[in-house]
Amino acid sequence: MIALIVACEIGFWALLSAGLFTRYVLKWPRLSAALLIAVPVVDVLLLVATAIDLRRGAEPALGHGLAAVYLAVTVVFGHRMIRWADARFAHRFAGGPPPKKAPRGGREHAARERRAWLEHLLAYVLGAAFLAVFTVIGGGLDNTAPLWNVMGTWSLVLAIDFLISFSYTLHPRKP
Image: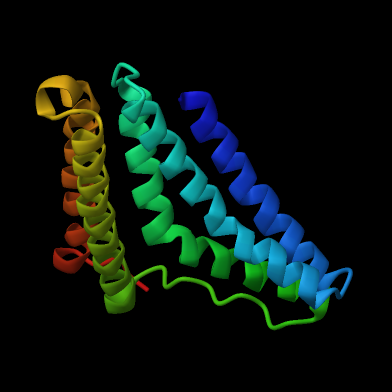
């Protein structure tokens, strides 16, 4: 399962890079659109493969839990990653404006950090929802308890991210 997650991550970046390359370097908008539309298909494939694996009776393991985490993170942060890459490709290959730099301090930086943490929280909730679906597919909580082990570590990461992100509200960096 972990190999499939790695393959999906590679597929995500390969399709994104190919889509942007065909858009800005080769100037083939139709192929570019098709490649960029295929980016979320990678996530659907991982979702389906994980569900099928659990439904067929595979022993629920860390990999299945990580699949839920990966899916949630790409659903919540995927658009931002695509916009980030698009801005850089447009600047580098199509004479677009330089990408905007994130604020390094002040209130704008603190607000950006808070928004990022809220997105992290959304990914966390969505990850739990994916795990709940996998739990139902896998035959109930008695059979799929190991899937939920990832939430302990993720809860700790979310709490640390909260402390760091909101610390900028109390003690903002100097601009």
